[in-house]
Image 1: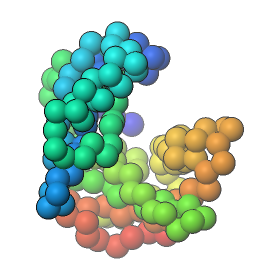
Image 2: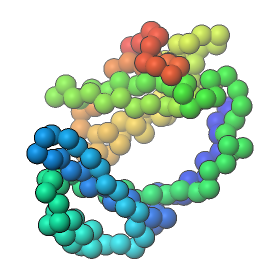
Image 3: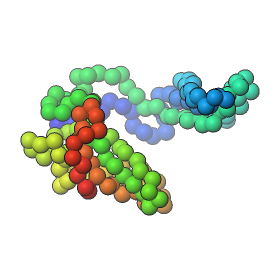
Image 4: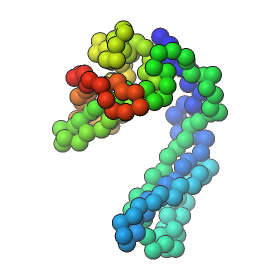
Length: 170
């Protein structure tokens, strides 16, 4: 296995910072996003007060607020691995669909070689590495063990910079 090195922090509720994004739509239908980086100690109540105050000073409609807890480290290309399909533009697109026909595509960038058939641009449906990933991906999409989600993997395809190549039904 030749996976890169993870340097991002552990997702444990104590991120490095929070990113607050406010999505706005104007009277013509144009949409913009305004984002601000806040300390990880910023409370939900403080973010709500900020959002309410922002709405009071804009003519646009604030229709979405996204609060992201960020777990990051210093980026270093030496933590990545050099090999076949090692570019972040080389992608496995994994199509998932739930019982309500809502589709969601998860992308694996710079896929690890064990996820692919040898000398091919096709994914290896028997890959243990992919099976482990699919299990964790579906747990997240379906809301964990107590979730009521119904997502399942439909297909996966390798692409290089664009969504192309043969999809493999999973």
